[in-house]
Image 1: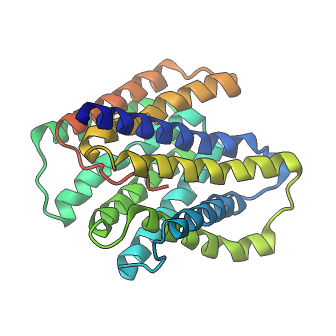
Image 2 (image 1 turned 45 degrees about the horizontal axis):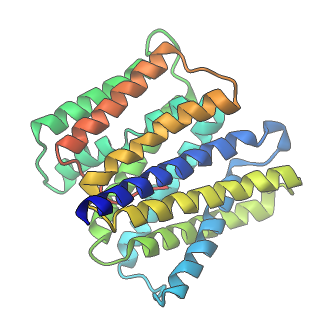
Length: 291
């Protein structure tokens, strides 16, 4: 039974990583000439997810009333900042690079937990942080190529995502995971709705499909990841979230006819290795995706 539960958890987490890796794919499929602004893509990401999660919660008889409004506000602030910078990064750089750099977020969680929560770091976790950040340096190749704004924003996105993860660790004591995601999605919708009304673009049918795909893929990814944590401890399944790096490389080659360079593949491998070391060291990525 235990083995079966762990297998189900691994499958759900892998599916979550697959769907979340599809979010940046839909972002990049919307052509720049469509004129659809980033804020409209963010709005759809939040709106579709909020509607779906409200239906799930209400169908289970779960109240939508938040338990800790202050922490939920902090989680939403950091999460929105992370998502905004991530979407801009995805629009301006190759898919595999953006997704891989964003996977620095668990290492920022370790750092923030050490600084703000007083949690001790095992030696293997310090090594994981060093390997992970070194992998991103290999991808960015500072000194050999100019550091672009999207690349810098990808790192900033990982930092904000790490801050969001850290608040989620505290929220586990007061709010259900799906409720946290619902209020985060609702916050995204509320924040960006005025901007969409003022400067949004009426999409054609093709772009509307892609916009809806952003929301559906994000909601599905979060639902699968949340379900994974019901069947096994987070430390046992979090490692499968790194499959999104593998999926992003595959998407880039299959859909955008672009093969990542050697530096990107080596750097991605180092980030994956860092994630595995963090997992072996009892890493703290326990709460699902910040997006």
